[in-house]
Amino acid sequence: MGRAYQNRKESMAKTSDMKAKVYSRYGREIYVCAKNGGVEPDSNLALRSLIDRAKKDQVPGHVIDKALDKAKGGGGEDFAPARYEGYGPGGSMAIIECLTDNPNRTFGDVRVAFTKTKCKIGTQGTVAHMFDHAAIFSFAHDDEDTVLEALMEADVDVTDIENEDGVLTVFTPNTEFAKARQALTEAFEGIDFDVEEIQFIPHAYTTVEGEERELFDKFLAMLNDLDDVQNVYHNVEL
Image: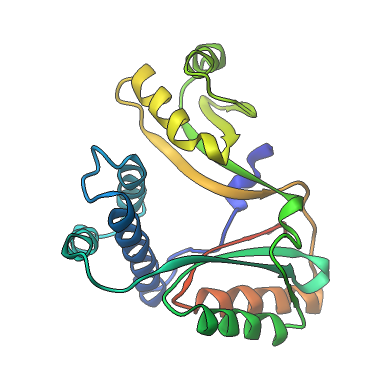
């Protein structure tokens, strides 16, 4: 798998406007997760993981609490996941994950980002087969065998384990996320995950240069400006 997951998506909070967008995206995702699986993190493991990740990304507590309170109310927006795929500048590939209350609007907005940067949006499955849909857990530990044994005892399908400077990264199929997380937290008390996410990881990376790189940067910027876009995964080496 390599350390490529660190290059997985574009959501860096470089300005106050971008921070606000990141907070909004976390708020929306927490709301949907809590509304679908319950507002108690102890019984909704996906919600617990999401809140932990939000805190590590320095999302303010009031943003998290507001999303949970909104979910408790039972009303509000009816967001649904949507995923779009296609080819970017220089033959690059991209997968865009969204949460939307208006699929027609979201598709139109995403399509504009493709067309205005000379890209081509495709149907679902167009490029997904060139990515692994993986659950990733990264944490401080120096004994691969002990970690692998704990996961195997819990019947977790482990794709790969990497060890770099005392940081282990475990890769499993995306469907194993909850089981893998539970096995690790039960086996290693006080474990602190640097990464605990489900991501799309490309099988191989490509380089985009010159005018095509400018178009690619514009493509990412346009997508990140869209409120409905949650994550953008691509295969460009940054």
